[in-house]
Length: 139
Image 1 (cartoon, helix red, strand yellow):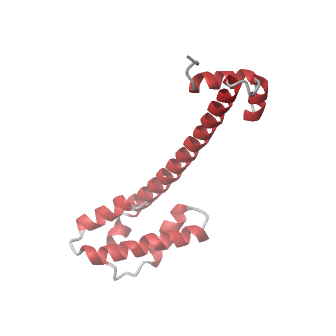
Image 2 (tube, helix red, strand yellow):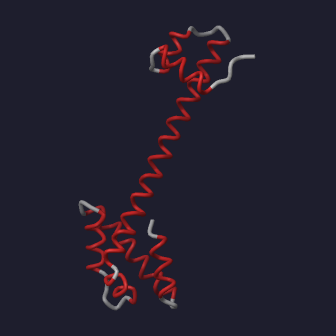
Image 3 (tube, helix red, strand yellow):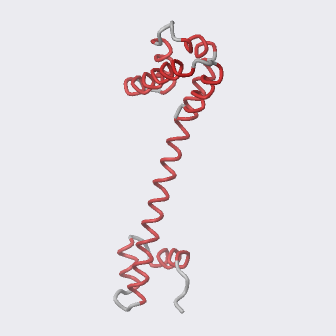
């Protein structure tokens, strides 16, 4: 989620191990605050406000606060969008599998088209249209 920011911090500071621990603290604090607060932006503000001043990345993150927020929000939205797209793909895949199975049953003479459409939860016209998209004609 915050990988790009971690890379930026690592490039700017040479003592990577300590900076990565500090960055891990920041990411964990943002996630914790996100569960408590109403927005990711507020969570980033709260995490930055609670970050120990002795952390080497503290000054860097504060001086680039707007960019830190933008990157956090962008990465969060990207992750959410990807999850939504994956779920949509799964849904389409299940629908395609259902329609293919129903068409096979129709071809085997085990199911009427109107019953297949009902089983798929759609009109006969919609079922025929979607079946044509997913299947080649029987040969």
